[in-house]
Length: 399
Ligand code: SAH
Image 1 (cartoon, rainbow, N blue to C red):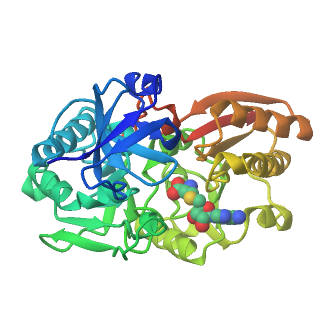
Image 2 (tube, protein in one colour):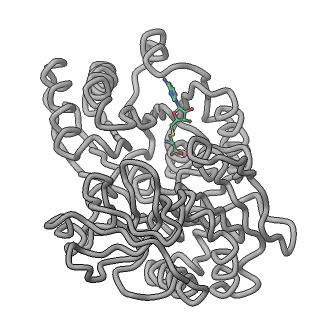
């Protein structure tokens, strides 16, 4: 297929040669297109340097990130390409012991740039693959992605495929994109296992693809600190950290979220795991909860939503993280443990660390850093795309 050619300015190919998968609009010298028109949003384009030498193939987008690279090789983006990419993502999860693990049957199968597929996220929930596209270009290939998934999985292991792209493409798309099943061999399983903890699954009504798979290893670490402890899980969503704490023998767990729906979900998950008499949930803003509640906790988890959606909002986000962490640091028992996170891509690990330090200085308690946390390996970071590292966390001992 003939595609439009994007010619870069002289010397603007450097980041591509270092395999960074984005081309910013400012790097484009000219666009050569047979129809003499701008390529459409999502169209496949070929990228060349100033000397007309091939650099990459990718999806065009009429925005600041003008091309997202699919391949640095001169190859056709056909069914074989999708089969190969999905298979390779699957093989990594196989290596991570996630694809046939009796204790965990949900994981991230495709993590966008981390798996060489910018704009595509696929989460696997006990037989159902939930696709979330973040670019029109990726969504244009949804049928090939479905085929590739069917090719990759053993029949018994793939019951359904659900497209959950409506929200992520809402701003970009001219036409309405529906959330829908693209394949359904039988009724999906709506309960999944993560390290033997049971969770109700709801990719249709839940946030993002339904569950925050990126905290799996951090929840496991939390379990090591919660036996016999009183735990407060703020921004709890469906209660991942709460269930792990109770499984590990916490004496009592309080879960807080501002969303009524999330709290109903936590309560269901608590019942599903049989812990109702040691748990209480609260629909509340976290800061408000700290203000009104005088109880003392041994362990506190702070896992707020991304406070900085872009570089422009980092200043306010830093103030937000500082206020939240200072409040928790004031409240926590002596000898207590704080698990604190930021999932803002625009806040670097160093900035997050410095913000926590600023909060600690304000509070004036002695604090030791026990762990530096990150996202798990089924959310891999492409070394050439450091922007892919979004989740950072610290475990602190407060003396
Ligand atoms: N820790 C969770 C994921 C957190 S997602 C897990 O392991 O699954 C962030 C959650 O914060 C969402 O459920 C959202 O409803 C909630 N939230 C957003 N703003 C809040 C606020 N001000 N106070 C309490 N919860 C809030």
